[in-house]
Length: 466
Image (cartoon, rainbow, N blue to C red; front, side, top):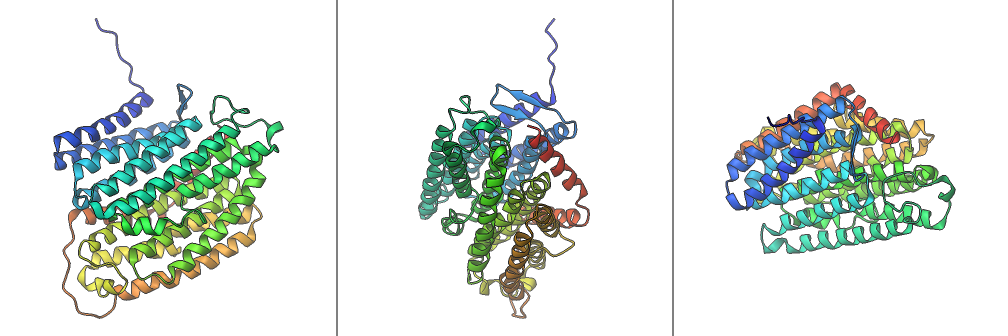
């Protein structure tokens, strides 16, 4: 008789992650777009289900001293699987070569999942580099006109990885295995550790669209195809924040006071830069690029708070912004195909496509922080975490920035509901599906956010208990 094979939840999760990668590679050769969409969607739903099961049951397993499957990692695997599912649906219609896109998306997803599961600094660098390379190729496969944004993305990602490599070299003497473990307290004040901390902050700020390392973001977002921009803003940038969680709240836990100061400064300048420059934008895609920069500043408030409450707030906002920005770029991508790109072009969208106008309005109101939407809950948690950590001035500055953002979002809303006569624009089922999921989520978790708040708190507590 053959021995019984025991399949644990962790084994099932790893198998699904590998299967998703294999299915993407197979799609490149089989060239069956519709079948690939169905298969990849089913696998992503399975990944979400299994990772949620592991999260709920608090399973904690270390694999080869390189990966760690525990509630913090599975929380973000669940989050990223939802985002990837939405981008995959959108790309089915708007990617010029969906089978090739599927293969590259599988590698991008692998990079995101590797970072979420990382128990090693090398794994984090490897995951980020895989994501950057795959995304750069996603941009290029759409045509020669996309070479410039692809090269910009690749060069900046290469610089970020090189800086992280130097940061790793500086702390090698304190952590020869390069695992994500606490640096000895006796080494906290050494120049090597402090310089390593700042280099990691700079490199991950470059990946996460944090000022002043974000000047490439608007050009790449505007120059890339809309579906790839949705991936960049919704998934890639959020993975950088997960890496920040793992490095700064575990490796540099004894430097929290310095980290709080660094992130406070980065948060303030990032919010003001993104919101002020967004005021003068006329291209909607570029406007949302600067909006994403300001949102990165809001997320950093939780890092500046340097507490469990701060981690919970940032984790909640990462999920909220991922949903909102993917929904926004779904509409932008659809309209871009019809040469509708500027705020003036959006005139009378309320008449041409009531679903798109209503969805984009709700998304922008959520980004502003209007109740009872999910974005309001995220900002409330972030501002409260700052106040609870004694950073009242930071909370006040963040509230001021929220009011600044009202102006440029209002310009788009007023344009959409202008009285100009226009013909209806048909919308594909893919965009409708993405919008219905996003709008339902930001309303539901705006009215009843407790399940996500509880999950984010639990994930943060397991990170701090690493």
